[in-house]
Image 1 (cartoon, one colour):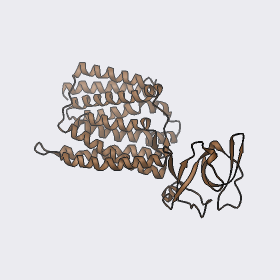
Image 2 (cartoon, rainbow, N blue to C red; image 1 turned 135 degrees about the vertical axis):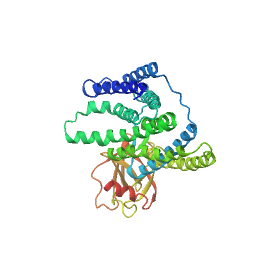
Image 3 (cartoon, one colour; image 1 turned 45 degrees about the vertical axis):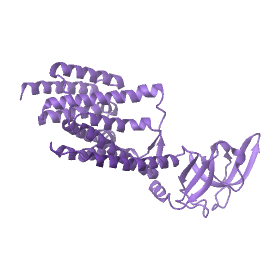
Image 4 (cartoon, rainbow, N blue to C red; image 1 turned 90 degrees about the vertical axis):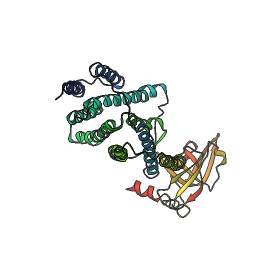
Length: 375
C-alpha cells in the first residue's frame, strides 16, 4: 500500500474512533458541535493531504438532471398526498427555527459533502479506501441515533435498522459513487432539497414512517441509476441540452398545477375540497364523493337552515345539514343532522368549529382516498 494510502487509512480510522466514542461512550456531536467537528476535520485533512478542486466536465448537466429528477419525485409525491393525506408542518421561519434546524442542516451537508469529495479523491480509486470512506460517512449519519436508540429491545433494534440505517446506507453509497464520478455539488443540491423541504414547505404528504423510510432508501438508488448514463459518455459525445430544457418545461407546468390542487384540497385557499368517508348524507352526498367547501370566515350570520356545512367534532371533520340555528348574545349555536340518519346529532355545533358551507359535490372522485384510509 502506498504511503499516501496508509496516511489516509490512519485518518479514517481516527475518525471512526471519534465516532465510536460519540455513539457508545459520550454524545458530543449536536447541531453545531458537528459543524465544528467537520471544520476541524477539513482543516486537518488540508494540512496532511491538501485540497482537491472540483472540476468535472458534466457538473452543470448533472445538476440540471438532478433538478428534473427532484421535480418528478415531488410531482408524484404530492399527487400521492391526495390519497395518503397531508400534514401541516410547524413554522420554522422563526429565529429559533432557522438557528436550530435550517442553518445547521445547510452547513453540515455542505461540509460533509466537501469532506467526502476530498477523502474519495485522495483514495484515487483504491477500493478498500473508498469502501471505508463510504462506511465512515454512513457512521457519521447514524452516530447520534445509535447513542439515543438504546437498543433495549428487538423492536428498538428493528426500528433503528429500518428507519435510520437502511436509508443512510443507500444515500451514502450513491453519494460516494456520484462524488467519485462527478464531484460534490450535485450531492449537495439533492441532500439540501431532501432534508430541508419538510422545514420550508408548510404542507407535506403524510406517509407512515415505514413508507417514508422506503422512499428515503429507494430514492437515492433511482437517482444514481438515472445519472449513470452520463458517466458512459465519451469525450466526443455531448449532452442533449435542448432535450433537458424541454423535459424541464414539461414538468414545471404539471408541478404548478399539482401544487395548486394540493393546496386547494388542504384548506389554504378560500375554497377547498375533502373526501366524504361515510354515508350519513345519502342521497345528497355519497361515500367517496368530493365536496367543495367555501370557508365561512366567521360570517356566521350568513348561515341558513337547510345548508350543508362542514365542521369539526372531536377532531373529526363532519359534513351534515343544518336543521336549526340559535343566536344568543352574538354567539351562534347550530343543530345538524345527516340526511340518512334517523335522528338529529346529539350535540350542538359551536360557531368556532364551523369551517364552511358545501357549494357543490364531485361524485366518486374521493373513493381512492376513502379506500386507502379504511385499509
